[in-house]
Amino acid sequence: MKKSLTGIAALLLCACAVQRQAEVSEVDANSGIVRLTYGQAMLQDASTDRYVADGTATKACQKLGYASAFAYGQPVTTCSVTSGSLCVNERVTLQYQCRAAAAQIGGW
Image (cartoon, rainbow, N blue to C red; front, side, top):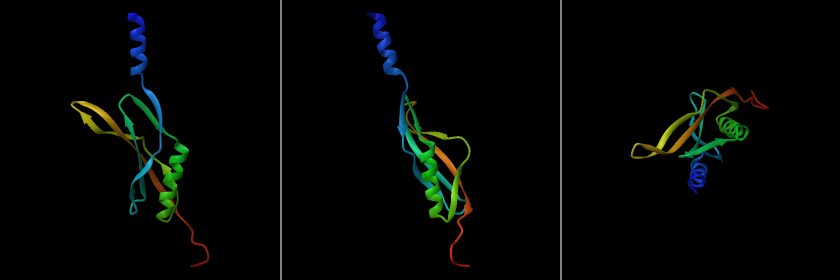
């Protein structure tokens, strides 16, 4: 009985993989930087679809007049909600650099 309770407890405490949608959180037109974020709760192994995130960042860059976006650096994880000394919620930030100004068609 004790072994089965230990097994059940281990299953409940394991990190659960969760898919999250990264949203545009910050756009800096001067430097051409776009930041996307998504949340991750305690004991979760959240991730985002990089293809969808790349498309979201590219759309944000195109609104600024750039052609595309390239991911750079590693994801930055910061604690967004604490309970005592525990981090209950984390915020994961993906950074993108906008590249190449979009060409204008039909004009000088």
